[in-house]
Image (cartoon, rainbow, N blue to C red; front, top):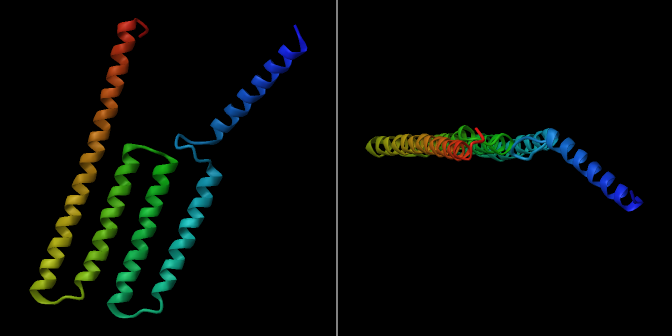
Length: 164
């Protein structure tokens, strides 16, 4: 064996071991635990900064600001989880977090109104919330059905080849 061949084989082996070590440290989403923790801290700090902006406000404007800040934080956390552990359920949770955040802000905005206008505003907000959650659930079921169909196709192809 030549020295060149041994060098190439040892380099390839080193790279494959390094790749395996990195793969073991990352999740399916390609994010390491350290990256996840850092992003989680960033989200927490941004949320705190957003809530701090609301402190100088008063009345319903403050309530709206706080609802927006909480909503942004919940959505950011759900999106982070979806990037860290991707799944149809994680995508569903992101959509629900967005729907809940929009609903909470809409309810606060309705408080600026009175009488029939306020009631109509609240009903509209509730209807939009219900629709958004239904859309999220349908999206999750569609993703599950696509995944199941893909698995069935792969199983059928493997059976046809005689490998199953």
